[in-house]
Image (cartoon, rainbow, N blue to C red; front, side):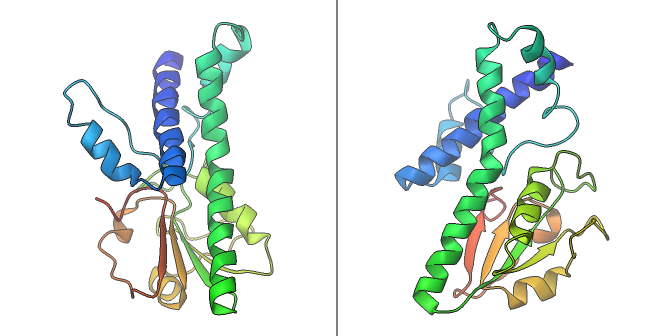
Length: 200
């Protein structure tokens, strides 16, 4: 079990790191992965906002703690996946600042998805919830948070999907819940898709 989850963590880390490289290079990571995966021996996973859950985000540390010198790749994968939520936060804040510079007003930002993966109600080690809570502390900005699978989360107000996206200037996809598929937006809205749901 430890090896299975550590292997998965390394694979996700590659996808997450690739997404950050592509962002810097101005390349659509989803299109790139789709092209690369046409090779019969290549199966790159989809990137996300990090890694959560009580297995993949935890199990590699059991190997790292006992074999620190031998588990450099596993350790680095953990660092990449732990860094991704903070990278997402900075990307969101950058778009907010650019909006303020261009529009001379504070945008309303809709954050979609708080569980650690799609279509579940589990928030254990959720990178999306970590992102939401960090953003929620930025009182000078206007955020709404949507999680269709959970009614209440401590210290976070959950909004209805329709209300949140209708009011938003910036829409952020953190988790690819089915409820978020095929939504139609005004061209004036800025879309930040960290889970690839608008590409599927």
